[in-house]
Image 1 (tube, helix red, strand yellow):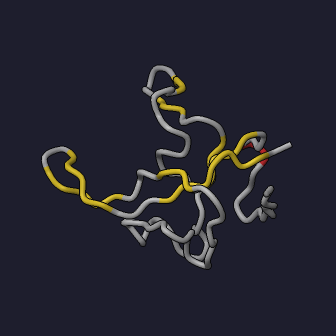
Image 2 (tube, one colour):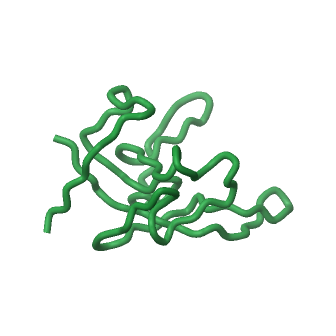
Length: 112
């Protein structure tokens, strides 16, 4: 059975990268309790690049398990990240990427 491990949000901010400032909202933090999912994003979440991210067809980013880093030679699981820290709005378990297709719809039930 699949389950949501965390719901994560973050707002855009300017960060130094390769000698210049770039605006990004890649860092997300877990929130507790219910979060409103709107037509464009989750409450408290934002996207820095609205051309490539966010919008009606890309309102919520879902990734399963822990973040996997591809170093070019090997892939390794990073253990130093918090759940949901990078890119994802929903961290899930039991839902393999190979079982998910663009356009799939899921119903999430809150357990109180």
